[in-house]
Image (cartoon, rainbow, N blue to C red; front, side):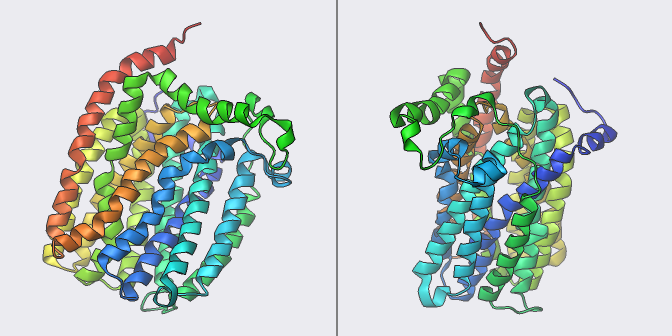
Length: 452
């Protein structure tokens, strides 16, 4: 395995133009979370919804946990006209971005206080389009590199993707969106969605300039939407729905495969519980919307983006397993700073210190996590298998974390104790990680020396 040992080597890696494409697509993946997450959370809170209700509305992000169901179709269905013009990956990306634009425009015409079910439905549509977008973006990031480049390029691809994601969710897209609705600018949240719709048109124009990865040899029999006469449905489902999952279990072995999936489920549960309630906590502890925009979105996003590149170098040098273990312990410890903040109150300096430490280790864990999932992904069934593993992780971070508001309500608003609980949630994940590391050596030997 090639090892990058210096900063100059890392910078030479990043000169590859393909990383710029990954950066843009990472932005496109992160930005929708602002629409059905941060902005919607603040809108719901200002509309008078309870913590429990806000948490349960956040359960719409469950679609990220089940996008593996339709991942085989995103991997294989060739969209009419768009496929011929843009190729397999970009055609789906542009389609999903267009659906998000329509949903955002529709959101700008309603409000939670007048029609909460419609707002929730439109936010769900944003989440579905975003979860589908992620399938194509993840597949793009992996297939844009040749097989012999994977060990050297993938940690940096994960870092650049993470940087782009945080640019969309945090220091560019998220900061702008929250600031637009803050005290200084003062737009209504419906107007914020109108501005965001215009930003999406610019994103779509930029995506049209991105190069398409070379299709794998077995993609020649991809399904063309609307041409059912060209394939036998049962055979196609067997080849492109059942086979990707069977191949994963056969290649890894049952014990390692199940252990990896359990690890993905529980490792970031505490982070998801904290993240879902963070904006509600900031408001209740006394921070203004402008402060949330600056501290949480801009400052926190920049910290994560910058440290993602450092995390890539460290993960490449020391290995993904050790990187994940270190990041898990550190992230859990950083949660205790939020407990301290709940006691101290709205201290900008303490919040900056908390975000500095927390986002550094989140970046470290995210890069290691993406590299970890990519390592177990087959290039033949890239989108489907990556979506399966990412979906299981998202189930822990979204669906299970949807009860975070109810937990805080059960604790009678005791934020300190809530953050201590999120700290303890990392223990099962660390135990599973140690178990996976024991099972990994035979898998690596089989991967390096495949049988006939």
